Amino acid sequence: MKDHLTHKTEPYCGKAGLNKLCHKARVIYLAEVVNLKKNYVRFAKDFINVHFHHDADDAHSKNLHNLNIGMIEDLLLNNRALTEYFFNQTDFSDKSIEQMIDMMNGMIAMPPSVLLADSHLENGFILDPQTPIPPVLNFECLFDNYKLELIARIANEVHIFTDVVMPHDMKDLFNCIPRKPQILMARDIKRMAFFFHTLHHFKHITYSWQKVISEHELIASHKTKKPLKRGNMSMGVYECSYQELESIEAKILALVEQIPRIRKNNR
Image (cartoon, rainbow, N blue to C red; front, side, top):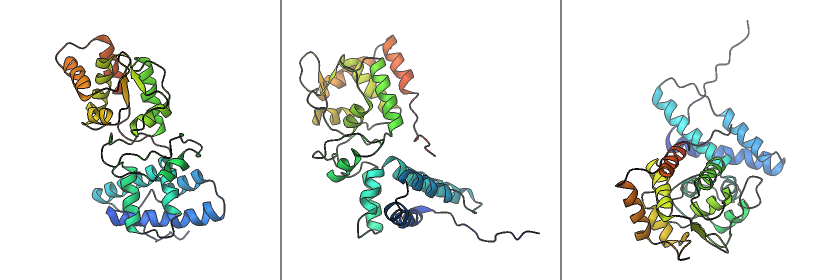
């Protein structure tokens, strides 16, 4: 008879569990990726997979463990530049982990060097390294490449902007970085307002999206060529709220509803 393994794998629960995962990931990253030149994506997927299961039986532990695994998956696979920025710091503490997670969640600004590094990643987008992500006023969203592709496709299909937009245009927009040399132009303010209102309705962006667009001057009217103000957008939302939906608005509603509310599984 074969001997059975008696080792029990404990779940990684709560903040302490997330900290343990991050510290372990960093140790393996330095050993395998930095020293042995292992492929980064292979390292990330291997780490997630070997920590995915545990021996706890209660639902509470399972839920907390899954929450942390989801967090580490988002960090390693969808935020590589941010991960490598922190993992390569000489001083990496629990406080560092807290800052890293807050940056991933858009709660505090990312260092410009992270934006610069992101432009050199295989699946990254070129961002302006001199323009940090706003620390307070932002869309409060975390869109991976898959969702950005969907949003760009929807925007083009229903003609939100005067020209065709690409996923990197949408990433800049939701990072509060005005497009250069010409900021995005709304083809129809009412339609554009309804589009962003629908993104908020399905809990993809903050309730304060009008203020974000206005204060960062992210979108302009194609008629006046001037950045939109909150009053322009709120009027558009008001008109949509008290009138029967037009066919184009119904289409926007149906398309935005298809955007996943959880991250795309990359494993």
